[in-house]
Structure formats: C-alpha cells, structure tokens
Image (cartoon, rainbow, N blue to C red; front, side):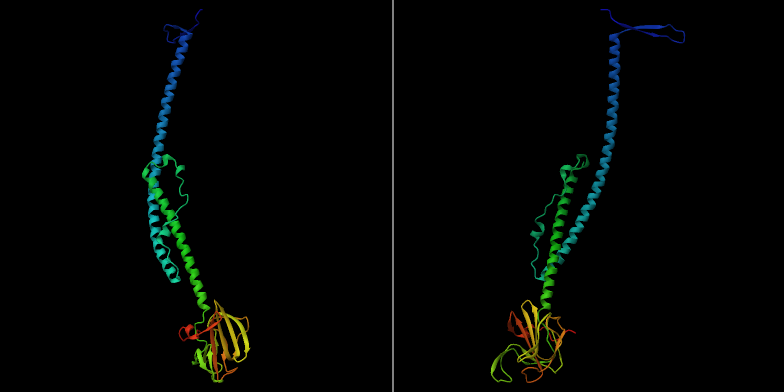
Length: 309
C-alpha cells in the first residue's frame, strides 16, 4: 500500500532558498501527540501551581481564624469564670433565704448532678477549622461548664421561688394568727377555772376579761372575716371572727359593733366598743381565742402590748 505524504513548503521573503519537507501521516500523528503531551504537561503544572497557591492562602486564612477563635475562647473562659463566682455568691444568698424560710438547703451534690443537654455538635465541625487540637478540649470543657451553670442557675432560681412562697405563706399565716391585745386596759379575770362573779360557783373561764372604760375601741387581733355579729345570750353584743388556719376569736359585752356579718377585717381594725351588755358586773371585754374549735389561753398568743394604729 502506498504511504500518504504531505508536502510542507517554506518560502522565505528575503530571497533565500525555498525549503520543501515531505511529512508522512505517521510523522504528523507523532508530532500531534508530542505537542498534545507538552500542552497537557504545562496545564498540569499550571493547575498544581494554582492549587498550591490557593491552599496556601486558605491555610493562612484558617490560621487567622484560629487565632481569632483562641482569643474569643479565652474571653469566653474568663466570662464563664466570672459568672461562676457570681453564682457562688448568689447561691450563698439563696441558702440564707431558705434557712430563714425554714427550708432545707440544696446540697452541692444536687447542684452538680443532672447536667445534660446536647451541647455542641462536634461531628459537624470542619477539620480545617480547628488546627490546634487543644482548642477542642478547651471548647468542650467550656461547654460543660456552661451546661453546669445553666443547671445551677435554674436550681438557685427555683430555690428563691420556693423561699419567697414559703415566706409569703408564713406572712399570710402570721397575719391570720391572733397576736395583739384587743383593747387597752388590764386583765380583771384570767383564763381557766374561776368563781363566777355573779353566780358564785366555780366555772371554767374560756377567755380573759379586760377591764376598760365604756367606749374604748376594740380591735381585731388578726386578719379574718366576721362570722357572726349581733346579740348572744349572756354575752350581749358580741362577734366571732374566722381567721382560717383553725383560728377564731370571740369578743363579747360590747356597747357597739362596728362591723357586720361577712365583713373582712385586718389586724388592728376597730370592730367594736367596750361595754357591759349581757351578764356583767361592769364595763369590760370578754376575749377568747379558739384553735380548731378548742378554747386556749389568749395571753399565749399576744406579742407585746401595743396595738397598731
């Protein structure tokens, strides 16, 4: 088979001899292959250089980001330490509140236990982001400390709420507990067995008699609701106040009542005037305190001698 040739003529413009070359098909293919290989090699070298340059720039960027992260982490660790110190002081105050409220102190084992939550999703972090392996441990530790702070802060908050509610309960209970003198005067007959001043026989006296001039104000000894106000055989004008929590008070021999059935009164409110209605030998107030329906000595429930204005 006859081989195909191509003729390549080079004609100079300067008058030199014309050069003629005969090139076979295989030489042409070989030349094309060599030229293509050279182009590919050059392209690969150029790509490698560009990639190296890009990776170098990325490395510098990541180094800069890591420095910023380290600085931010250091600031965060300092902030966490400051919050921990403040929480320690707050916990001490909360413990004092609980002691005053009569509640048990939350133990350290409770404050330190039960810490949980997802925290940081470590599996989603890009490996390039944390070149310094020590940062991973520091961030994990900071995350755990923050979770613990949340736990402790929530427990301290709940502790304050419980203390406030308990003290509100005590305040409410105290406001309903008879604790002041119902009127100014002096005791003319005490609680317990006595010889009845009119009938002469020994009878149990369920309250105290307080001598005072007619018209002397009688005051409620605790907050409550007037359960009954009106005339009662033997006791004349009298009234009962229900203070809840099992407490009731009874005021008798009044000359005038200042409240009506169902009316709400506060400790120290004027509710009646001293008199001598009913079976009496003179002007005085008969005052009783009942706990769960049983009469008790009223003087056991009187704090001091003053009546609030």
